[in-house]
Amino acid sequence: MLRFEVIHNIPSPYRLHMFRVMARDLTARGVTMRVHFMAQSHSDRPKGWATVDGDLGFASVFHQDRGFRLGGRALHWNPSVLTALRAERPDWLLVGGPWDSVTAGLVTMVSPRRRGIAWFESNTQTPGRLGFPLGNFKRMLLRRYQVFAVPGQDGVAYTKLLFGGGELTGTMAVLPNIIDETVFKAPLPAAILAGRQFFRAIGVPAENRVAFWPARLVEAKGIQPMLRVLAAVAPKGWSVVLLGEGPLREQIVATIAELGLGDIVRVVPYLDYAAMPGLYHASSLFLLASMHDPNPLSIVEAMHSGLPLLVSRRIGNFAEALQEGANGWAFDPTDAEAAILQAKKAFAAEPERLSQMGGRSRILARKSWDSEATVARFLDLALGPKLE
Image 1 (cartoon, helix red, strand yellow):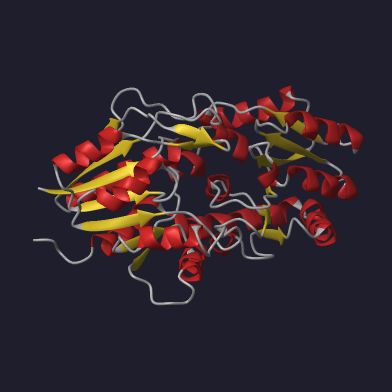
Image 2 (cartoon, helix red, strand yellow):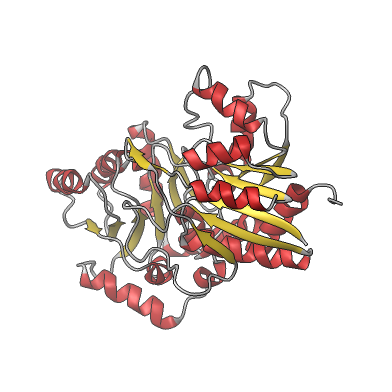
């Protein structure tokens, strides 16, 4: 039996879904799949974000992590991953973030496989260092793979940028970040009612429309610059719900008070992931103001939920997500004046137009993030010629 092994950092709702879809597809192709997780969670992730008890729907192993944290990042080190791969050479080896952990770097260099697939989410908006030494290190690792798995158009562009326009050493295979769209397209009426009740409970007036803004409270999410935009726009008949936690919470709350946004912006901590579909469907607009953001899943959730978008151009999946004027509005978070103009358009839009734009979001979501079709297209490329 042919084997497809995956090396990944931690489980999450969307990754668990992707791996289930991938395992079903591979089984139909006569290939077995197993996922090696480096840890069960990270301290900066919401509690209850992913459930790892019981049957995950695919074969998996959780390895002991002997790594450390550097600059807030977990650098996983799992010696047992290398032992497991050495015991049975995989036919295909998919490695998430080849340069993001000690484990992935060593697996890249020494673990046997017949066909290697490097899976990474870097993008051109925040490409990092492309020259010596880090860029050289990344190129050295990637040259050990036959396939590059990237989440979309910007990932392809980043890979070409990294190689300086030179000849790529591997096949490009797009693997977008997907979610379980069935949960977000049509949540139970009780879930939508619960979302509306939650908004009422945190002080959103019943007559107000909601701009939903799920984001970690960190500098990269561009929260404070966007708050100044909201202060300039002062949207009437709207409430903005900022859902998230993080080290900037106190500063953000202080900025809201300073700008006089207390009646407009509510900051609330993470909720159980199961509540998210109801919150999207109880909202009228999706907001994301990131300064840099590799490939946010929240925008995919919002689009499957039928929401129009008011989003930063600096997100990695922007090219697939936004058609200006058709399903939303885009802005550069460093250009306050332009951001204000776009926000004014979004908050002035009539409900009927917002609904029409949300319908367009659904169409675009099906095109780029349909789970079954996305995984099938990826595997067609990633598996390559038949292995004997």
